[in-house]
Image 1 (cartoon, one colour):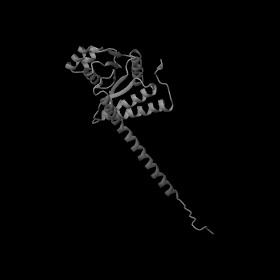
Image 2 (cartoon, one colour):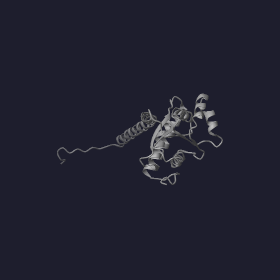
Image 3 (cartoon, one colour):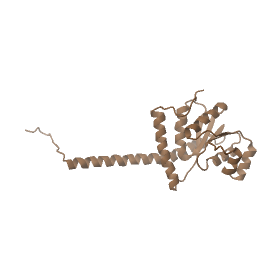
Image 4 (cartoon, helix red, strand yellow):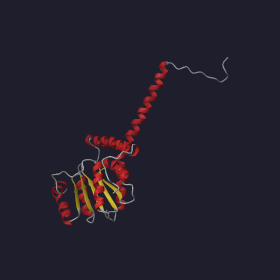
Length: 226
């Protein structure tokens, strides 16, 4: 005799398969939504960092500016900022061996800005060694060792690149000084080429986060404490 209120549920193979399929579909859609939200947030995060830097440097120049080369508009944007902040030092990281500061000015900016930058006579360092973002950060550290008075540094790159740069810097530079701020060249993402860059960068961000924050790997950068 069955107990009062006791209920037995018998599930057929078809019902069980349907339930598993619905659960799998839900998890897939949920994962897709989370991934899409993260990808969409990458340029938003860069704009937030840009606004923070604009507030800090509204009436004061950064002690130094570092621009990580690799995509259009970065160097010209940095040179324009240098023109507006002539007291700032400039590091251009990841310069091709065939270029000098003169050729970079000629290729990357309008003549008026180029002449203004040359007239400033600012301290400009060119890094020919860096081939990736980790090495950009490494050479930035070397630049800071040579310029110990730098307290506030502005890092410039493309908007999709800022989050990964900040992850790497926050991992290897844990001290309170110098303070890092981030500015970026914005992309419209109206073309598949720009969207593809964003998608590719999202994978690099995830990989970097896992390697540095979870696996605690020491990648490429050496002797940061000295």
